Image 1 (cartoon, rainbow, N blue to C red):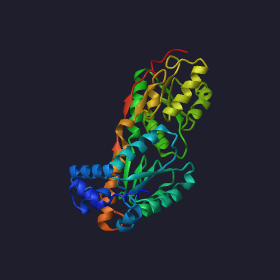
Image 2: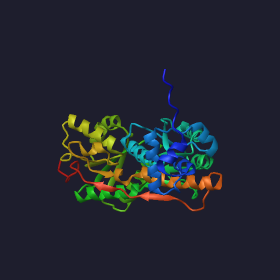
Image 3: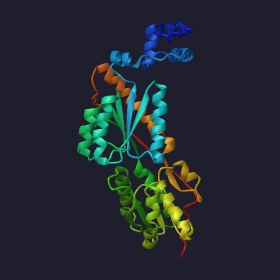
Image 4: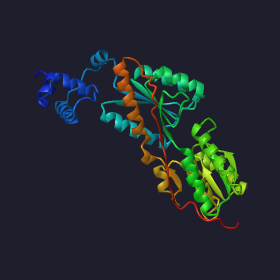
Length: 343
């Protein structure tokens, strides 16, 4: 019986790439201090030889797992999927893997994040719903960490936010331009920080324009939520509805079609997020785009820098300088909004 060939070694990879063993080790351990051209050559050699490093030995020697954890509230939400895709692609290019933890219950977020940090080198918290004090304590415990769609009161910690106020302002100005003065907001989950920020922005806009009126109804964040509140929306008499997100807007639109309500002739409707679904609806949804902002890639850039600082210092980073990025979304005008018509 032929003897099985031995697994390729790091020495063979080094010889194939024309570099030292130390350079191969640095590249495969995710170091960014190696010339990009050399790093590509090393990875190609490792791929050709089908070299697989001993992960246990590597983790013991480096103290790292080359994985990060992404803690997310709802994988069914396309916007969160966009963030996951951006982080995964950017992290993979630097030799890191991403483990995903979906946490439907806000009460479980902190515990899941701590457990994830014990198994990974760093954590990305997406739209955490816990109170500010709990969040500040957690972030200090699990650093390196980056927040997405949430900021802390502590200036030492990194975050990537969306300027929801700017997005809502663009939507309201668009509707006002069509003559709408009676607005209705189909609100998101009560514990959602994004929902609170959008509602605060709407109130500020209405306070600045006495001709505008704003009401809100409790809705949610999914298709079924929008579908469920359609009758309440119609009973309100509002001429334009701003949905918490595109999923809610889609649910509303579906039910409006069933009820014989013409959008936008009878009712103007806007979403928020700019997910791919909004571009294939009939009519196309007027919304605010976030996907092109690539918050996931931005979050990885901040997190990678903090991991490197942590490695250099031998402890979780606690910088005085804040990595606080606020991305401004842009309105995407579709066919779901139009001039006010008499009813």
